[in-house]
Structures are given as structure tokens and as C-alpha cells.
Image 1 (cartoon, rainbow, N blue to C red):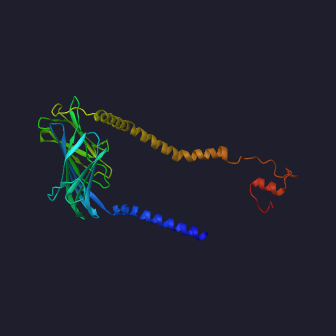
Image 2: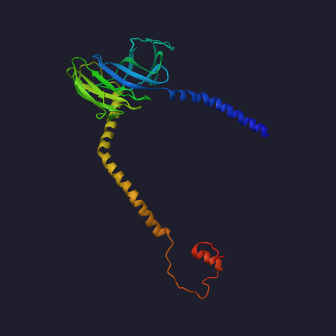
Image 3: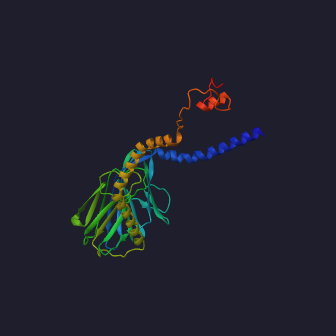
Length: 327
């Protein structure tokens, strides 16, 4: 019976090892590969028909491992559809759109219920810098208001495992429109300390330049308001929910800016109170409740035992220890 149990345990260990090794291998392989975006530049061109084109120029330095696939996922949020896909690289290659497969210099676009997924395939690349330009057109992505229409776009996406060292986003309006207001955000937080903005081309375009790197997981979003009734289109069904979410985030940020310093002061005061008042409170609690009460001495000498307990037990209760004198 013991031999059977031992054999059964070894079989299960071998099965678990066979399952775990292939599962862990891709993760270990992925950790061996690394890259960095030296630049991530985006041009957004608003058209009079209410659509706008996006050109993403990604200059990537492959620092470790070999790469042959580019990947981009665009969540379907705050627009109706994307089309007019093109991909080129810095060597002048124009990638051909394919239905499937991984042929070099081709790309595949998959549309799911929640996102578009784009993959492009290039020759094996390692220890070099390459530039890829992904272009597409956004339909139903503008916001329409009485005071001015707006384009909001997460220009540099945050779903990255590596940093972006530098970048610029340029938004260009139709010739008859002028830019009225603008803003930029990093993970929905005002990015005035992370980027600069300047009007160009007579006020019909604006350029945002990053002043600090974007860490993995940080996205850069721009918002530009321009002259109303210049482009065609009407507010889409998603706009009301997007405006409500923007108002909520703005209220949260305003609350943090107003009460954040007060909360910090309170936290410092509480820390000091716990640091210095904690030991004092513990000592006071011990002094009042935990220590042995002081008992006045009744007499220096008793001519007879004060209790019927055996002397050894009485001595143990008196000093709370057993010693040879008690024994």
C-alpha cells in the first residue's frame, strides 16, 4: 500500500511539472525582451465632415530580445467606428492589410465588441531603433456644444509595459476654425506640470510637448475646443455619459486640490500624536490598570503566620516566584 501511494504522488508531481513549465516559459521569455519608446508623436487632423484622422509615429528602441510583431489595441469608447487603416515604417515600407496570417510587411485588424486590435509584422529586429506609423480615421468622435465643438483623444495610450521618453501631440483644425480652449491630461489628471502647449499656424493648430517621460501605464490625453458650426455632425449618444464622467473627475480633482493640503496636515498631526502620545498613553494605561498595586507594609515582624497556607505556598504568592527559600 505504501509503495502504491508513493508511486501515485510521483505521478502527480510529474503531471504538475509538465503543466507548469510550458505556462511559465512564455512569462520568462517575455521578461527577457524589453524596449523603450524614444518618441511617440501623434498628429490629429479634424475634417469638415466631422471625422478626424490620427497618425501615430512610434520610434521604438528594441533593447533586449528579438521582435517581429507590433501590437495596438484601441478600446471602442467615445466614437462610433474606425477605418482607413495604414501602416508604414521608417524604411519606407508600406504594409499590406491581410485578413489573417503573419506574413512580413502585412497587418491585421480585428474588430471585437469592445476594441479594435491591430497587429503588424516586420522582419526579426533586435538591438536597433525602428519607426512605425499607424494611421486611421475616427468617425463619430467629436463632441458638440453651443460654445464650441471639441476633440478629445487619448493620443498616447497607457496600455504599455515600457516608458515613453519624449512625445508631441499636434491637433490641426479646418482652415475656417480657430482654437478657443485646450487642456491635457495624464491618466485623467491635469497635465500642466507634465506638458507644454502652444498655438501654431495662426491659431488653427496646437502642439503639446511632453516635458517629462510617461511611465508604463500612463496615458496622455488632449482636449481642444474650436469654433462651433464649422464641422458637420451632431452629438452622439455616448457624449452625455462621457460629459458626466468628465464632470465627476473634475469634481474629484477640485476636491483633492481644496482639501488635500488640509488632509495632509491632519495626517502629519495624527502621526506625531501617535508617535509621541502613543507611548505616553500606553504608560498611563499600564500605570492605572496593569501594574501591581502598592500595598503598605503592615509590620516588620509577625509573631505568627498570617494565614493557614503552607509557608512555601505563602512565599510563592508573596513575591510571585518560586525559590529555594520557599522550598
